[in-house]
Image 1: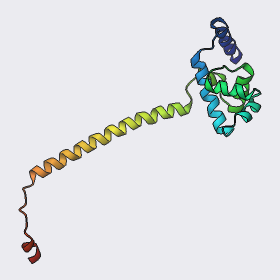
Image 2 (image 1 turned 90 degrees about the horizontal axis):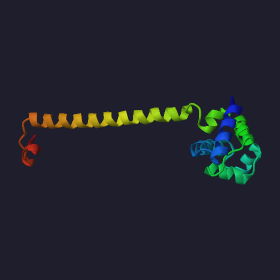
Image 3 (image 1 turned 90 degrees about the vertical axis):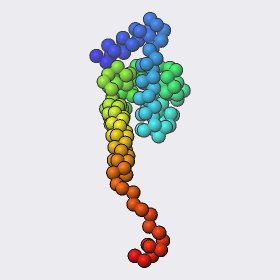
Length: 145
């Protein structure tokens, strides 16, 4: 199946003279993540592991040049991701799903905080209105107590 997918992308690229930018961008993100995490941001080391030049790594990371079949297969072997995931054609990675979930929780937490703050302020205001004002005690009277 992976080779069929590569053939399809190759066919689209041949007909349009371009790989879809979304595919290039997604691959660039995955490649950049791998280079940063596993190669300590060393593009030369990454190039040796993938069997391409350092300039090709840089161009792929910038999204200006597409990966070849060998680079895709080598990155697949290095990352353990499927080809679909590397090219952004598969299900979203777990990190993205978790980030979306955390973001939605963040909105709920913010709403809860705002509601709680408003309720607390309303309670303080109504309590202040319900209590009679106490007369001010003079300093002499305080000293005598």
